[in-house]
Image 1 (cartoon, each protein chain N blue to C red):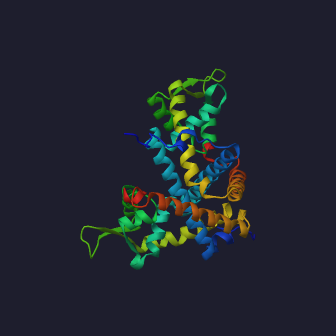
Image 2 (cartoon, rainbow over the protein chains, first blue to last red):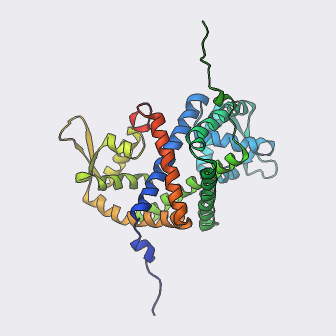
Length: 172
Length: 172
C-alpha cells in the first residue's frame, strides 16, 4: 500500500530565509522586544505596575460591571488560563482586583476591578499612552500607522484561523 | 526663584489614544502575542526547544569560533544579563552550550555552541523558518514585508537612541 503521507512537509524540510526576509525578521524581533521592555519599564517606574498587569486592569475596566470570567480574561489577553490566574493572584494581593464566584455558573470565577484598581489604572493609562505614543505612533506617519494596523490584523487573523478550536493559548 | 520644571510633562498628563490609535495598538499586541506563542510552540513541538533558547543558539552559531561573551549575548538578544545567564544555564544542562573563561579577559565568561547544540539548531532552523514563513511572511505581499521591515527598523532605532547609554536591558 502506497501512502502520500510523509514525516514532514517539503516546506518544513527545506525552508530557509532569504537575506531580505532575515533582515525583516531581525528588525521585527528587535523592535517588539525593545518596545515591550520600554513600555513595561515606563509603567513600572511611573505607575507601579508591569505591562501584563496593566492589560488585565484595562480589560476589566472595559467589561460590563467591571468584571470578567477568568477564561474570557485569558482569551482577551491571548494567554493561558494558568498565566492569567497568576496575574489575578498578584493583583488581588495589591487590592486592585478581587475574585468572585459567578452568579450564573457557580463553578466559574470572575475577576472584578476594585475602586483602588480603577484609580491605579487611571494614572497608568496616561503613562501607557505616552510611552506607546513616543516609542511607536509618533515615530510613524499616519499612512504607516494605518498600514501597520492592517498588517497586524492580517497576521492575527491568520493565527486565529490556523489554531482555531485547537491550541490557542486560552483553550489549552 | 521660578522654575519651569514640573512633575510630569504635559504629554504625560493628557495623552489618550484616538480610536484609530487604539485599534492599531490592539492589533499590534494581538499579532505579536499570538505570533510569539505560535513560533514558540512549533519550536517546542518539532525541535524540542523554546524560542528564547533558539535565539541564543542562532547567535552563537553566527559568531566567530561559535562563541560570545555573556554581555554580547545579552545585547544581541535585547535582554538582561541575568536573563541570558539563566538561558545559558539551561542550555548547558542540555549539553548544547558550554561556558568558558575568556582567553583575553579572565573575568568575563563566554558561551560556546557545542556540536550537539549545532545539530539541534540545524533541525530547529527549518522549523523556525517554516513557522515564521507561514504565520508572518507568507501572509503579506512583498511590498508589505518591505514596509514592515522599514517600520520595525524605525521603531528599534528610536528606542536605541532614547535609551542609549542609560537603561537598555543589557546595560542594567
